[in-house]
Amino acid sequence: MVDIHHISATRDREACCDARTIAGRSHHPIMGPPERHVSDRLSSAMYRLAALEQRAVEAADSPRAAMRLLAGVRKLAEELQRGFAELQELTARSASAERAAATVIAQARMVFDWSPVACLVLEPNGLVAEANAAAARFLNVSHRHLLGKLFPLFLSAERDAFVDRLRHLHASDGAQRWTAHMRPRERSAVECAFVAVSDPDGRVLLMLVPGSVAEPTAAALPEEVP
Image 1 (tube, rainbow, N blue to C red):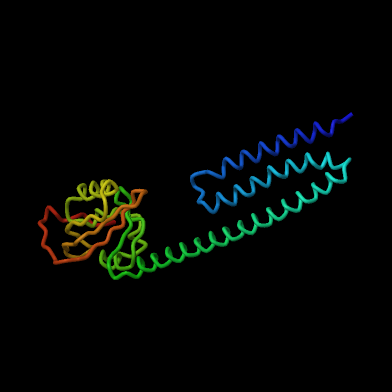
Image 2 (cartoon, rainbow, N blue to C red):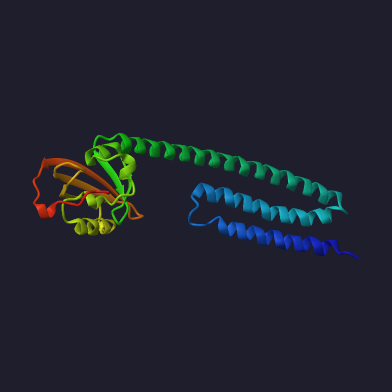
């Protein structure tokens, strides 16, 4: 004969084990206090659900136990209702935060694209990952032609030093400033002021402001940019 009490006790242990597992996860460091509160509430409900399952077996032979079980189920339902309401509120807050972040990113993208200052995003090896229209105009190349090109090719000299500077930017705090001579395609060399800052992935946001036109020596002239 199947022992229903044994089956219920086994399920009780399994449910409690699952609840302990979830309760342990509720204190994961990536959770904030509101998320931990909701997770703890739902974990507690799982413990109580396991206990109610055991009491349901006992209530089969006792009207009084059945009444107590009904009261427990009602309380558990109310607890779950409050927990899910809080979960819905947290979900709404998260969606709002994501929309706000998307708005900030879109605004930053507009500033980058439409800035009158030449702006580029360079890989650590100097390849142009992104560039705005002002950068393409200054370098006298199309935007499509500029992407994927080695930016140091537009320098009049000290190209290796420029790449070394890019690679060491991530180890420095804040923006770095220096000057160098640029040679836009089919134009005279121009002294430019550079402002650069590195992101956590090693990419560099580079802004350059043209200064005076220079007359470099023949040794400093770069080869043509392909």
